[in-house]
Picture 1 (cartoon, rainbow, N blue to C red):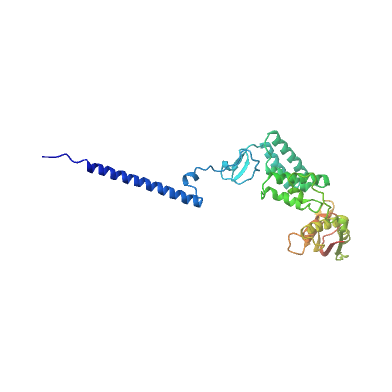
Picture 2: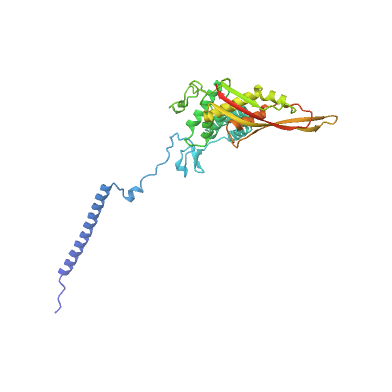
Length: 337
């Protein structure tokens, strides 16, 4: 006789599975609690939460100067683009850019006053296009104004342009280098450098007493070895001792003083006089040339400056009536009185 299987084994099996499932769930809860305690103790953030944190981006309302380093568009304010790793304004004026390039070319050609006028035209073009002025244009105009300033009023205007360059650019920007150098040349004309670090633009920048040496405070001694038998020597001596030559030597001493702050300087030069024949048809002429050579290998300083400046200052050439080629030493000593 067959009997039906007892239900007890099945109930025991279900109970056993329930115990195993409950134990596994309890183990997971305990592990999670332990991980939570460890994270709380160490201050760590779960990976799911750290990846959910937003990446900081430039605020659209920040007045961040152009020129900041960037790797993408999110690194720049909304009014700027990331171009070649640098933030720059979106809006521009093509006419203003061309005029700024023309002004730089005028500076390279030595036309500082013309470059200043061209920079003013570039400013007007950017304003007409309602585009912000690029830093390179602001600082380029400031450098030009500083180099061209000859009066106290012009220096004040140029210093304000320099201050604007500093406030609109980032520290270390290459556009600031030329402005800094131009200002350094004026720091002995009463320039108060602390004004550039004030929170607001200053009304005046040249408010300190000037400390630069003046030409009348420089004592010059020139020793030109006599060559009375050489043609044209008398005219040469007159030119060397003349006011244009002495002014050029004094300017070189002031430039050297700005770098070394020494109260005296010397130069050993050689003055060469040559002439060449020029056939004029019915008669011949002899054109004289004066060359001033330095005796050192220095590329800058008092002696190289005097060598170049005297070559220009000796505009009165000796009058000659034959071919000549001779030279004579020239010793120059300059000092503050």
